[in-house]
Length: 53
Image (cartoon, rainbow, N blue to C red; front, side):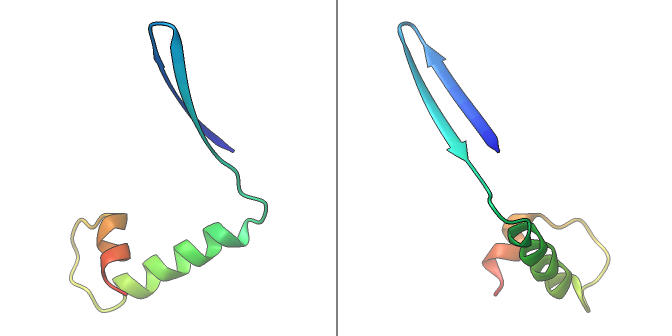
């Protein structure tokens, strides 16, 4: 579970991300591996992975 809490004077906004199956992370790791296959060495972000199907 990831939780982000934004707090101000007299108020809060909470965003919660809950994962029920670790396969979610495995799919992301596999997608990143497919993205990197054949690419030149360098520094890539997960934004790069998500923008290139």
